[in-house]
Amino acid sequence: MRLGVGAALIDGRLVPGDVAVDDGRVTAVGLAGSGMGIAAPGFVDLQVNGFAGVDFLSADAAGYDAAGEALLETGVTGYLPTFITSGEDELTAALRAIPPQARGARVLGAHLEGPFISPHRLGTHPRDRRRDPDPELLEALLDAGPVRLVTLAPELPGALELVDRLLGRGIVVSLGHSNATAGEANAAFDRGVRTVTHVFNAMRPLTHRDPGIVGAALLRPDVVVQAIVDGIHLDPEIVRLVWKVAAGRVALVTDAVAAAGQGDGDYRLGAVDIGVLNGVVRRSDGVLAGSVLTMIEAVRNLVETGVPVERALEAASSVPAGVLGVDDAGRLQVGRRADVVVLDDGLEIRRVIVGGETRVAA
Image (cartoon, helix red, strand yellow):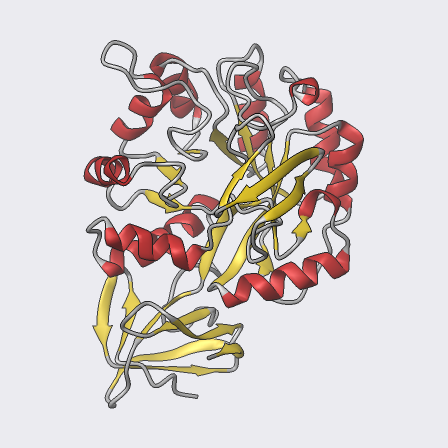
């Protein structure tokens, strides 16, 4: 079938012409025609705590189906259900509950955002569930389910040993919820870590005499910085600064919670009571607790800061897919799996295709 578009995002460039899809794969690009809009790779979200009323820490198969279908509506075709710092029993149960297949967006593995995080940079994570690095606990978690990414604080005793274990098993490590100095962060980057979780948030701040984890990450051309571009977690001027320094290695994430797509009200993030007021998610003490951001909104927000459309779309697709090292997501190329988002000129979603099948149509 032909998608009827006027251009497609191919290797970071908007290539004029239509796109053809057959038998689940992209078969041609740059075809002559009179189509309109843009075909982009399906979005990949590395940090989704919940969506459409579903909190993944307690979700069953039906919950994954419901959240996955709702995520498709926002252009996400692949994602990592994300579990905040919790007890061992809670985390192993959540990992075991991930279905091998679910409707909607594809589950690309799980993101463990903890429990090996700094007591000084907890954010909304429960203090009593935080743990110092523990190889036995790590192995129990890895054995419980399809862990794909682990956020940890590299300055903790034994953290670099965990980094080695994780990288040795092909699991991505991200630095976050960390009070690391620049030196401690660079030690982890030198060990093979290549990304940071929601840059600036829940980490040692960047100052003129103490660059911290933020300064170290921004200066490393081999490190991808994940960013929540919702106008709340990061000021737009900070987003512009990050892009100036790290253009092409910014991965948009939503850090979405169950409230995403639902509206204001009271919700849960794991064991934490949270509330949403005017689209801002907080604990009762005022601490930010995730977001109700969608990936297409993050793309539009990034474009509003002056980032070209094609680069913003990369930040939602090929860059996060590259963090995971996956070949069948985040790219629109001949011969590759056809996970595609079709957008109009106003960046409104008109169609979402998963494995060559139209799943969302405006």
